[in-house]
Image 1: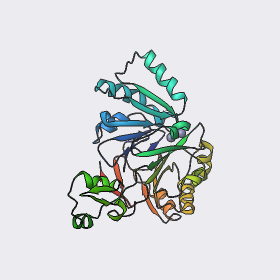
Image 2 (image 1 turned 180 degrees about the vertical axis):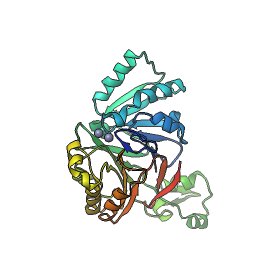
Image 3 (image 1 turned 180 degrees about the horizontal axis):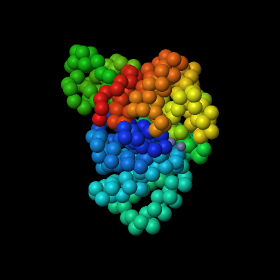
Image 4 (image 1 turned 90 degrees about the vertical axis):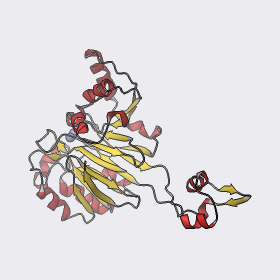
Length: 314
Ligand SMILES: [Zn+2]
Ligand SMILES: [Zn+2]
């Protein structure tokens, strides 16, 4: 699983940061999901390896403009680019009427179907490689976090053992890896004898704007990566509270107490320079896990062993 940041600025874009958008890329194939779609997100996608045709679903955390004003344009462009595959949008419930009104007044006819799912209800809808749930956050308007948990357990085969047993490479290997017992030349072979114990499912939480990180606590067990806003440094803690935002020290303290191994901060106020060292220093003084301050086009890979690494600039 990979996380590619398409926009990391709060409120307004800057020369080096666009407004909020994150791509969550599945481990297998090119399928990916978009979390938030601030204005200009489709331009950021054009400057990345991602394609609107392989976009599987869009999650919107909340309806402030810096998280969703890019949505109508992106949907229109996907249509003009020839998309025909249905697109699922998981979002606060007002999103459906907003998009439908936009389609009506701007005479926008999409050559593909939109399926709207209310954020609260996302747990009842299946996804290919992970299950998704939502968490209600505290912000000036309704805001959600989305929890992505791998749904398929990953086993690795012991190739030496399987070769010693004389089982030929092919579908039987795949069947053993999938956890099935097999029959070969009159013998039964048990999957557990040829596979390592399944690795725990990877779990990533990506949050909308939020002034109360403690709301995430019940879902942080076994979480590998938390992506959370840190709009300000602690010197603006009062302003952060008034605006319904977090500051770096607040989310760092939560992540430290929750024992989270990896924390990525994003949604940085436009008042800070491209490298906001004061936010990083503030968080690092409190949080002892792996801390990252996201930049546009940074691509992070969550390895199967739970290690998060900054893999490349997309
Ligand atoms: Zn925001
Ligand atoms: Zn907001």
